Length: 504
Image (cartoon, rainbow, N blue to C red; front, side, top):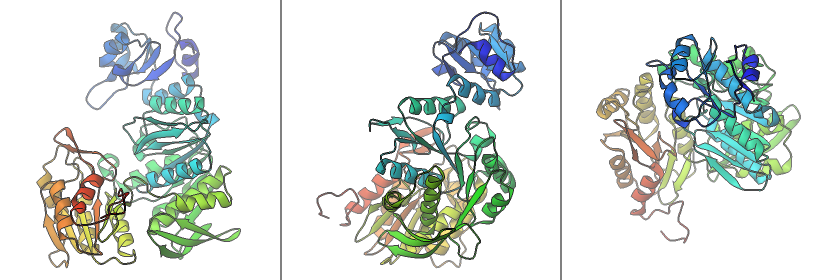
């Protein structure tokens, strides 16, 4: 489209001359011929400082504020000047890409825990039903096109920056994808990454302490999530009311809301009851407006019951329901790094992304209820350069619910790993009945867990899930909890989940 047309849409003054825009980017290093380059102010520097690089790589126009305009002009890059360039970036990206979100059925999922599980279940059900679908989130971006071919796109953030997001949606649309499910983080909502997508339906899973290094307070964290449930971002909402934050959101959302719960003492439109363990999953009954119905969660625990129910309601909201959908929901398990079973017997090994006190509590309660479980051994820690207030709470939860607690390093990033471990350990009372170990090095901690485990014990390695790297002092070292746990248990005669020959 022409720069003049975009400028008119943004209420900005177009530069002189005819400029044709063919793409949008935030990164000066990835600018291509014909791109609109968005130069945003940052905490330590202004994006306009890299205008020369963007121009050299092919950008033909900059979108920036007054502070960046002159620097762009000096580098030979004409500028569209707006008051809020971050919000305008999302609008520009949507406009230049032809507003692809309006041509797809879109589902947005937010919450402290459960986003990846719900969106993954949705995608697997849609794959089983042969509906071309895509997912954008923590585990990356993937989609199956109308021909049945699978595609993966490398993404860094849970919710990509707006130019990347709208570009991904445009690519999905070109490949005739029908449904796009997306994890919508609180950061993305505050920073306008998800702007210009009005989801057909949005889901809230839960809220517990996390990301207070960014939001400051739980109230601010909640308000960030609530942004998704406004007409600018969604047409309707599906809200879990198991916690008080969800009940509050159901009252305060500015779009029509359907509620669901797993707590029988909570009033909801759809309530799960009679939850029963079945192998490594659960069966349950849902009471709804049309009477009771039976569902199955392919993974264990009340939170996966909630996630399965959420997925069912989200699919129904976009017109997908029926016996085939119900059957597919019951088999849509094995979410990478989410309660992932990597070894079965005589010792069970599980890897889970639980990196908050609430998520860790859910995981440990879930595993303790799996039939045949003797002792729980948990390997856990906390990430560096993130919310420090949750560290003692995570230690307290681990010692209260596990028989053996091995505190080790997560992603220490720039912090001293020993200091992080001490903070986690400070939450464990001296009177604990748990056996507690402080282990320097995640590999050594996982190996210790395997050494201590005996027949019918369950090892939970918590915190990193499907991540394949560990961030230490600015360097990402290859590390996969699933591979390490599988390797550590191989010498104990345990049958691992990737065994194919039936031998131990």
